[in-house]
Length: 308
Length: 306
Figure (cartoon, one colour):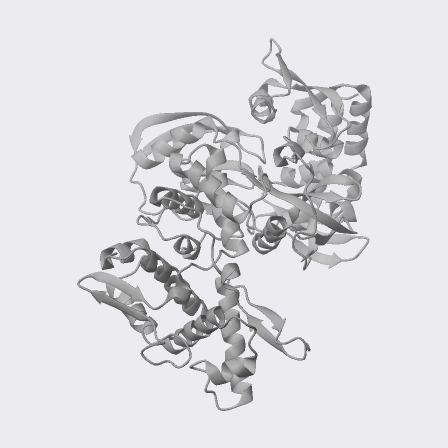
């Protein structure tokens, strides 16, 4: 018996009871639909409630819970007439989710009033929570429509690492925002593999007449970088002001001290690491990694050439 | 599982109605289901049940059972237990639920428990595509949210310094979570993913928010715009990256187009480090035209790099 499943079942009972008490005459179907119950699970929970109550535990102290001609009846359970308050995590999840979708400009009209009502109850100070994921880029609606229609889209894409611009036919699956950037995931016909593209790097996109079979459920896209064997490795020493790099990127921490943190940083393209090093300036030192050192020198020279 | 649920329902019913603090001993002898043979078995069972109630969000606290303050008892006050009715319609519940499933926070999407508490939804359709991932800092965010909504002081380590901050607001903007809060030096913005050893004070209502506080005004439009001492810069972006620069420049930037497809943008910069970092993402396709002081800082920064 897992305590998580016990908690979920108990949570549902403590939410269902107040609703039934507040809505006399509600039917089995209504309760099942509203709380995602199967009929047998609902009956099992009502039977359980029936044997609980207050000390003494006689007929006068136990709760009443039964089904009468398809009507759900709960009685003598006044103490459970209110749902449990939301935990901080639950409240934040609902509020942040609602605000995020609103800020992207893709929420239904009821979402705005729902967020306002919820905020009034759980975060009474005005202006105490704000979530802005940035409005959806114009491309998003074209790609979403293509994803649901199963239309292949031709994109002009500039890769982040190499700066190369390519034309690709993609089968878009989902458009989403992660850590401040918008992406489209899908099958790239050019690479014949699953790929994730940053929307702000797609210069142009046109829906083509070609179609594809929309996958029943597309895999949850993961844009966080995962290391592979072909990666170019570098060992970097970070001063305290640059130590955030170790939290921001998936790196291996080799050693950690108050004055310096040493990490192993891998990337598919040495230019990615070179850009990071130039960005960190004097707050980081490259300890080893020939390819990265060469890429960094090359990039530095090219940049400084403009300032001579 | 049934026995656990029965016992916990009985415990909760008792605590909600008894109207005074009750000791563990009294619970053991009064509430059905606590007939364990040994003290140790009872203690373990009771601890697990308390933990279960805590997971559900039931606020349980300890109070002295009498004026002599000899013994402590458990209290679940009905007014603290109950969720204030938000007055949501079914349509609004469904909208909230769908939005919550479209967003991941702390690596996961919302479970239905929260929407059940709000009255469930007749349309719990699953399978909405993910729209936004709001980052990984799930647990510390819940603590910070609690501190903001109950006005508790938070302490944390930030850039190697210990801080005590009155959190006025919690905000997510373009990929990062921020706490905006009062410090002895005035209102400051802190990035949540740089905060270490976060602790939340015990006392609710520990501070007042400044009159007229607005969260939006405190947040930077772009990472390089947080701060007061603006420097106006002119930057040239070559034709190949002009489209990309345009997408990232905020509305405060004045953009002039060149005949070769390049653009020159004039905009304010307050966070020089963030600005330089951003500029490097354009490789050698961008150049600071002025002021000279900013050009020199950029050159120094790039030269000093490893």
